[in-house]
Length: 427
Length: 181
Image 1: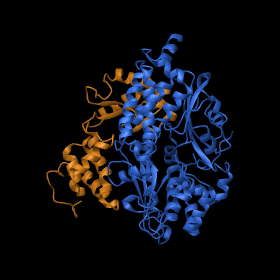
Image 2: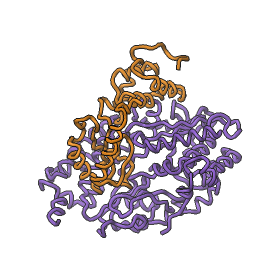
Image 3: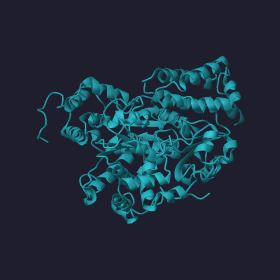
Image 4: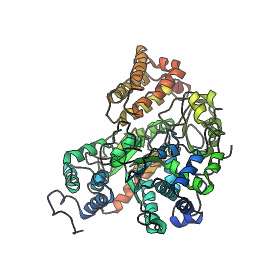
């Protein structure tokens, strides 16, 4: 299964992190072309490309853009660079290695949407990536690619890099907007959606880093060329992050639909130490577990949804035969407990009880009856939380329990983790 | 720096000119001054190492909002420190991908080698150690740690010790006031 190159076609080119180096490989030609095409023609190409959001929700990008009301200004574009889904590190690669590709994609979208300001909201933990992006933006200003009268036209657009400060929830688009407005990053009630009332109450589009990094290719090669990669239901390419028990963890760009989970695992060198695959988590920490029986599934939105999970934000975590799924579930539940913003009760309290129970279960201290309590807590959270954070805090643990009920049962009253005990006895 | 700035008060005497300049630049940058809260808190923390009440007050004064509003923001985000940490902040990611590749062992090792429990600061004030649960986006280089928000990846015990020893050495070589640069 060969890797393909759309997003990564300039990866590693000499000096490509600098403006000069990026221009040497054709950088910013797409922006010039886009400005000559005009906003409607750009949007038409994005529509033809079939591009769907790469932040996790997979919403069609051109459709999201089309929700902006006619004639209401100012409008804003926010680039979601708050990548913090467990198992995801692809936006980081795009910002670290190809910052100008993101800047160019952002400017193309900003021009198509006629925004006055584009903000790149980057998580506080990405200090190095922030510094790289700051340099790229400064270069763009120096060369007339941002600010007043871009490329000698009458188009003005400010480009502002905004740093977060440690809050997973700010990856949720309305929480991101509140955070950008200088508030606690808590999600807003929808509707109204950001397209109608977003940043400072104005029409706003929030797009993921990878989504926008595709735009230079789509504009220069055409939407049809992009759609021609992949399949009809899952067009284009995607960066997948493979981590966990593999020989060579990393990010891999592959075509959607025609590549399977097994192909991805192979690209990452297979399960490490010659061990067998026990389970995998696609999509990031929020998504449901899959097993070895799903290796042949294509990376297709519908096929993965039919198997009860999701491609989410483009991650794949591989777990070998020694993995304790109760331990993995506990870590994820801890994460959601730590990151719950506290706005709604089912999430704030639910993740607390979930975490407490999972710690006792992993330690072998929970009773068998408490597994029913766990299921009840999760049932009272899923679908009842203010935003997806609380819902997804239940998905992995419940799907793991369903796939490995005996493993969960075996922890009850065992006094310690039976999986770890077994491994130590065998060693 | 003089043009347009408010007269010096007890509050903004706490902040040096570099920090005040950063805050005022942020205030100009955004369509709404309130958006400068997060960058301003970063600027204050860069200077003081944490966010004391006086620092929050100074930000509020600069941005023309209530101190309570600034405080509400400062306590929401985990990277803003309410108390002075050690000179260097060490975080080991314990999330799934790191956990699968030995992050717990790495954290236990650092607790022993630094002789400090999770959340604590070494006796000489050099390092605060935190076992964070937020994924730090380095799953491809697991296990990993961040020191002062920079990632060090594919770590074993010796590798982590080397990184920290290097940082300690660097700090010893400087004036000891590196944070206030």
